[in-house]
Image (cartoon, rainbow over all chains, first blue to last red):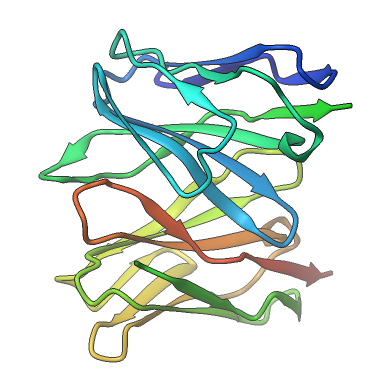
Length: 115
Length: 113
């Protein structure tokens, strides 16, 4: 089954404790992206990747890191989480269509709480 | 950069009525406009999309129209059903080669039985 998976689905942690949220897709998509969703602010892009070893900042990259060592995986790393990073996180992936993306498919989401 | 405005923020209709959600975008070079439906606690799921070389697209009870001149696009749901209740997001692809989707703020649709 074609899908985007994320782990963990729920995480409660404390300020400053490094964490990684994994994202994996099995559709051979070139493009992968991380979004955070907050009430009243909609979905905002954190980082994206156009292909292996190619990553760039989105609208709200501060406090986050990513890597793209393999095509299927795009982990999101919070080196020193803070309470303002409490949010619902979505990973998404798509094929590239020229220099832009095609339909983006979303993972199930990771609800992160930083105390 | 691209900016997408979505209205209304909430919409309540009676079952069987139509619902219309409107979005405007700022970047005239944007060429792809998807609509996502997000049920409570679930991921956004694509329900319909339109590209800039098309003015209208329909899929059963759902249709999307695009007016490139006015830079706005709309989602139309006919014969609404309670299971249509969800948050709906419009989006546009930024013109630069980043593939970044810019989302509207979302519309909470409630369909009353």
